[in-house]
Length: 365
Image (cartoon, rainbow, N blue to C red; front, side, top):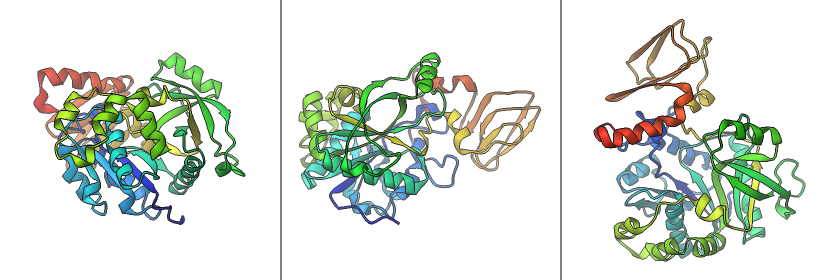
């Protein structure tokens, strides 16, 4: 058990994504963060529980879409209702973080903020909380720094961004630590192809970009003002507004990575010694669901019968059956009124299929 952090620490959980690569289980009405993936509780519930005993519910904020604000409150009932911030439409992570920052700075301009995605799996919990402790103390010591948590890569992943690690930084918060050392960020790299990802892995100089951040309210406010002034001006008075729709309709969609972090000068990264999954596609089930003797991974609560079938990923709900015969390396998903069958190599391309359905059969999204 950790000592409770200072009330000057505020956690922002980003719960507004659509999870398109997890279609057809992830739908507009119930996106991925509200689904139990490889476990009984939803990913959002698990994220809130990961903070339990370490930080008070009153220090947690959730940013989500208007249509999911009520569901977020039901999943995490201990979080104050006025700290569940509803976006009228999704515009990626920059506006979501700017919205939360406007509320937090109004409440406590000296706060240190921790930003976490709602739909990741992180373990073990003690190591995760230790890392957050260290990152928070570093943000207090280096109040102008923007800090990201990088994951040590285990394979040449092409599904998320990478971070090239620069020089080790001298910080009081990390003195005596053997593994938890802050480094300058040399550069951020967008999702690479397989060949480049292998080069990054073999170099030992790169980490996966986890999408988890720590910074002072002053640092992120200054960065948004400098690098995204339109967003800053639009949302700085958000706590006083009752309708954000016209503001959001005028905002451009932008990620915090490309809009801020790739441009900012004082960006640090902590290599995280954690088991981590962004649960970004059906392939990620292999990281959280054990395989049978033939390499098949089954999730969802339903049944799988397989004959001469190998290395498949199956998701089917309770009281349903999927049978595989003479196939390998497939993703087979039954969810509601839709079925997905894909080769495992095309898992990242489910988003393209969703784009096609957007124009042809949007009722299935």
